[in-house]
Amino acid sequence: MNKSLNLRLMKTRLTCIMLTSLLALTACKHNYEKMVEFPADASAEEKIEMASRLVPSKRQLEWQKLELTVFLHFGMNTFTDKEWGEGNEDPQLFNPTSLDADQWVRTLKAAGLMLVIVSGKHLVGFCLWPTATTSHSVAHSPWKGGKGDVVRELREACNRHNMKMGVYLSPWDRNAKCYGDSPRYNDMFVAQLTELLSNYGRIDEVWFDGACGEGPNGRRQEYDWDRFASVVRTLQPDAVTAIMGDDVRWVGNENGQGRVTEWCATAITPGIYPHAKAENERLGLDELSPDLGSRDLVARADRLYWWPSEVDVSIRPGWFYHAGEQPKSLQELSEIYLNSVGRNSVLLLNVPPDTDGRIHSTDSLRLMQLHRWIDGSFSRNLVTKQSGNVYEFAAPATIDAVMLQEDLTKGQHIESFTVEALDANGAWLKVAEGTTVGMKRIATFPEVTASALRVTVTQSRGKHHLTGVGAYKLLPTTPI
Ligand code: FUL
Image (cartoon, rainbow, N blue to C red):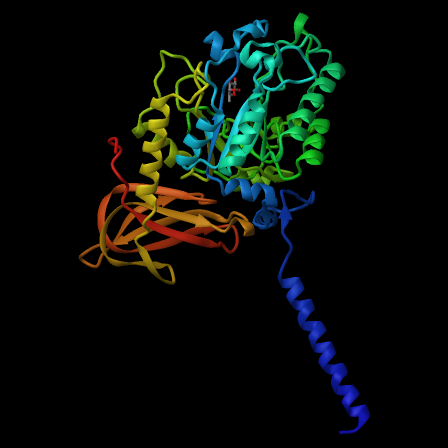
């Protein structure tokens, strides 16, 4: 072959390769991480197509995978037996007799919980660490002669047991004299946040409560959310910010109930953004709205946010420990699990340490019962083989729950589905139907004996990515 023919052939081959890569590039559209803004003239269909390409950030996805997390409400209210103190309580009242952070973390770890968030400062302003910002802290309490630090003890216990840790820092502060004097209080808040995020190792979640009141003399505190967010981003880039943050959304109730239709891609704007109020009013949305992501809503929205839901609920009636209260039953807790984790949300279960500074034995017993119930119900998936949308069992079995999962790295797509079970007569029996799936969707139904499941996605925002299908027989919720 002569030299010029060889060169011509090489050129043609190169052009072919370039053309193929160009085609591949146009076919594979890029994803939008965390937020998508629609062009002003986008049609409803174009918006849905763009919504289908909205995906979580890395830290959001890691957080969504945790499923089970825990709150520890502990502080001045524990000792005054109140839920919301006035903020003028004497630090001398804080005196746990045998605080044992190792017992907290051992108990929580044994119960399968993956991350623990401590109420570093609740709205009464009392700080569980010896802060330089106020004298209203453990440093001025009798506990350990004023030398104690609850946050440090928790950090060390988390290190020992390989547990993730988060902090709750209430923006509302009923003790701080400067609360309501906006710039001064914002400086104090930033200093508190900086202490917590600089001196206690890796923090995985920062919880800014939305509860908020006026300062002394009715002064209204204007929070500098931008500044607070940038402190978190600088000091703990991997930590998610929750509630008054744009990584994790409050589900809208404190009863442990996720929405039946729960989108991670939502039209509601996180409250920390300057345009949130106007935009949420225009769309008629707040955290309690039942619909945050339907097609109709997406068609009216200018932007969508990946803002997945967190279901916070206390194991007891109160957030703080009160001797007269009892923890919820296993029956109630198992329903909370199904209605939170089973509805595309992360569960944040509060377990309040008592006045001794320990997790009460009735609560740890209940946590272990819940753990055994979850484990016993969901550790054996009866599906052993998949052909298309049919999921076969190794042998006929009695089931009363199915679990579906989407691959969220590719976005959330499924809008509705049905599940049928193949019974002993060879008939397909509809056992479940639903709307969104997301990270995890668990549907329960009366027992059937079946040898396979057929899952049909009846509506989807573009191509869906169903990664997990499971069939289970739930354990009874009589204590085990
Ligand atoms: C609420 C507060 O009022 C409660 O005391 C508790 O901290 C809960 C998690 O958030 O807004």
